Image (spheres, helix red, strand yellow):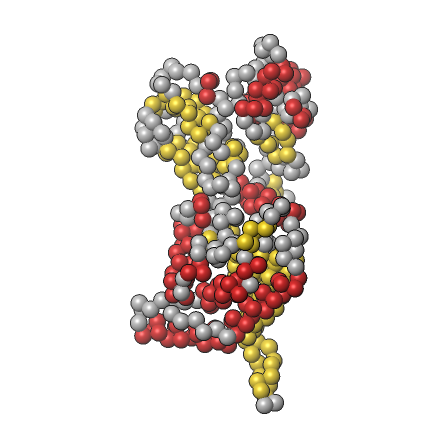
Length: 412
């Protein structure tokens, strides 16, 4: 008996995935556990395995398609079996042979969320049913030239067929354009998803950033001690300056827990534990894994856990549940290694706060007894959602982080 292959749901916050490559082709024999296709979210890449032995009877989406999770993407069965019944958009959407177009539209609407076609040159999102989109692709019809007759202006099959009879054709897709002094590269699927998330964060929140600096002499002295211990014993833990700053942030969140929150429009969710997100730069783009219950770890354990999360992100083996934006209660993003002295980090909604850690610079300061000298200061940039946190508490929190750094006494 034929069975469907569905688009897996990688985490509660993931609504769509992009098919990047079909490893098996329509008509090929497959075994249970064989890799069928590769797909990606905005944060990670995965491979989908065959759930059964049989023939790959049909595939419903092509490479590059953005597909809603839990939707049938293919069918596996015995040779000669029909795959039509598994088309998620439903057999009731017909080419005009049904007794009622309205009935077809209602069934289609209930069967599956819209698939949105996006214009590469204009960024326009088009409401189009999956079957209509597939037909338009097969007939080389430009969806931007069509006016949908379905619910809410959605393009359905009959719109594509009418366009085909009228002779509408799509232009060749822009893959690479070159000129005398420029070249246009296509935006990757992951970059599109990241861009969408960043735009939504800035558009839907009231973000404000405060900047402050902290005397870094104590954490630099601690780092010097760590390196000295390692030179004598390679088994000693390599605790970085970023680990120390994260430890200080956790302590500050314990002092001022009103910053350790999510803003959920009609309510504010307060956390009793610190679930720390750490921004990690990877070849696939920025990822933010979370260390659950980070407030329970001492400095050595915290350092090891954070290093493990960063390594998993770079290897692509991080669990999808650990990169959900709602998994962390607060995030730290460190650009100090790049020499950035001040920046404005973007909130990972629904989190209400994120700390940007900047480079250490030397500034003149009073050393006491009328003596002045140059002191190393580390820059701190706190972005917060003003809907959830007022300026006063935000400033007090940033000052508490500064105090924790300047009075650093972490042990390992």
